[in-house]
Length: 330
Image (tube, rainbow, N blue to C red):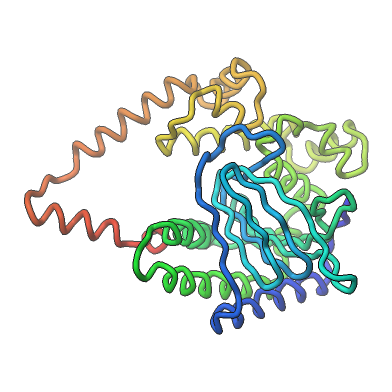
């Protein structure tokens, strides 16, 4: 189990890595790798995914990613944007004898950005060595930039690569500035509680996620962990886990997903679709199917309420909407 670090050394390394990548990307010495967003939130044995994009920055060695339809090897100086919902497995690969595996991963959780440094676990997979958390009121804009880079990379546009590099520079610059900050989240609640919440969000779609799983990762007893979490948050740990899973389910249902209710249940870490439905109804007052129907009706009503334009005006409006970056609209 890793030990969370709050010292300046971790922040300094994260800042140095991000700042160096800004310069490398600006000078076309770094490569941005973005796999295709296919088979999102679907069951793939041995693979996991996040509800928001992740940024992987290779420092030493290499990371071998396996996606449903492709593979990717991330080399030193390379940057990978893993799209939200894309299942993947990863393997840590050492470089030469003097270069051990090491990389930095940026994740997005609630209103916080996490930055962790990963090393080889000794079993072939990356393992978190140290982690920092940073609160920002601009999280939706930052996430929007990463999402837009994924969209642009696979748009087939004549200048998409230039646009990806430009947004990548802006994104890494913002993250580098953020890494200069102290970690205000650690002052708002205990480090252990914030770490528990990060572990929950990081393993949200895993059926193995429960109090025992978290206690094993944090090397304490399940009863003690439940007691500490409830004492500091006034919420049971099981309720918090289910509440975060419901947020993920609502996000999928709100975005007109083609996944079935059973697939959404699995995507949120529920093995039993019936249990998922009961928990969903307890949290929202509706079954997942009724919630989906209501959202569909609301979306239809919103579309019907939009002003109608004709001819060239409609074409211009549509083109304008397509060309406006979502990250700038938030």
